[in-house]
Amino acid sequence: MKKQALLVGINNYQGVNELQGCIHDVTNVRSILKTFVGFSNTEIRVLTDERATKKNILERLTKMVSSARSGDLLVFHFSGHGSQIRDRDNDELTDHMDELICPFDMNWDDGFITDDMLRHILDDLKPGTGMEIILDCCHSGTGTREFREGVTVEETKYRFMQPPVDIECRHQGDEEDLGPARKFTSLGTEQMNHILWAACRDNQTSADAWIENRYNGAFTYYFCKHIRESRGAISREELYKRVKNSLEFHRYTQEPQLECKKVIRRGKIFNIK
Image (cartoon, rainbow, N blue to C red):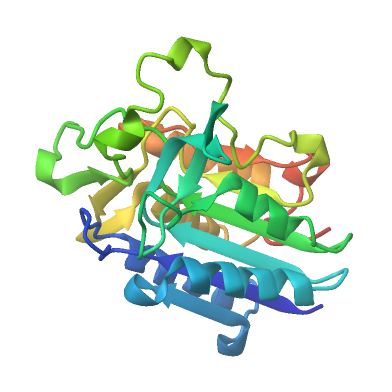
């Protein structure tokens, strides 16, 4: 079995508000993969800050997927900004919103990565290949700060990039007429050829939070914490429950998502069987 991972973390965006916990997320996930899944340094590719451009992310993700064979294990982790925009099809507005993740060189013309782009790459995934995708970003602009007991306002940010006014004007006032957002999981779980972990629902925000004396993605922090505590011997279903409970206990207003076939939920994390 060949193992490959692409880990992306972006704190310092080009021309937009910065984050602080995304690089820590990358090193945390990398430690988990090396310690409990047996990844070597050469099997893990890391892209951070200015190297995490749209071109680099898509090229390396495409190469990783296209070179994989049945029985291989792939991991793609992204920590950074996410957003939602109303899609355009040949300059005509379509009747839905698109979820997207924001690379370092994000711009609102074509400098983003949409659900469609990821799905196009995943269409080439060979049957029998295991792929675990972990997204710690927001797809809803419901706020930029939260207050929780014992945590100052400055200590928690959200990983959502607010579209500029001209982009928001595409859908302003039409919300009730638009169909559901096209999400990274819109194929339906029983048709999915991969496993998707998302830090929050599509109408929520993902916290960039001060935990244990440094900034982390709240989701990624508890995701790695519970894998570490179980020494990697934990099912996806149990891991999901523990992460969800930890976020609730610490008053984070986000509910993590695990999207995959039902039988896979019962399997061990980062195991293709």
